[in-house]
Length: 308
Image (spheres, one colour):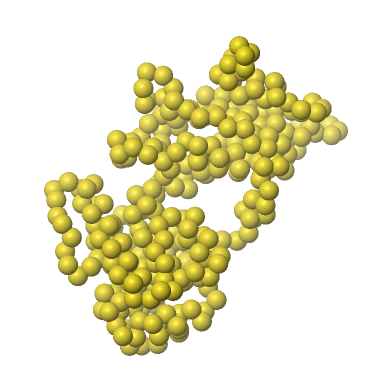
């Protein structure tokens, strides 16, 4: 028991050695890699950065033959730090567990990687370090490696003005839009009635985002084919399964590493930001004028015009 407790708090490299199975393997390690990042589920952790410490050990398949001092034949340390940086940049996360899982998964997609030990600790949340540690093997990925290599769908993002939502032609427009095989994500603006106002910027931001989501639920009530979705995971599943989505923006906006620069109340511009985040093939604005975007084709349509 004492040995198990010691190993529980030992560096991941010691755990890797103690739990090794079969023949000898090689290991690479990253020790005490500290990054300032915004992360955490508590309100006090939003809008502020804290130090996160990473310790990672990767078991790799031993190289057969001579290395010949060739960096292309080994799993570079840079691939480990790049995995950390990529997952931190992808979106703001609430849980260290989620971050550890994603980092381990990204590392294990490397051809040489066999097992990954990932320990992540918060250094500023108390008198000691608070953290998690996981161990994942390539065999744990299942079909993940195949799924990760598949190209993400490029949806059509459609902004509906309030007049468009109220239109008697709404169902026919959705009929038209769904004839296109590309996934369809609908976005809405603020409701006609002004949401509550306050003098606290962060609180007002949340109030405005919730007002947009309420408007989305009104749209969902108009057409049963449309489902309100809030997370990137839900959107990915819906796009792959042909579900018409209505974007509820709060989580994606608040969790974005680089959020929209525009005001939340400029909902057409907010939709443009979202379209670029989703790598949409097109943004269609019905009953509104969308600004030109750098990486997404934009089209505006007056109410009553054909959307095809």
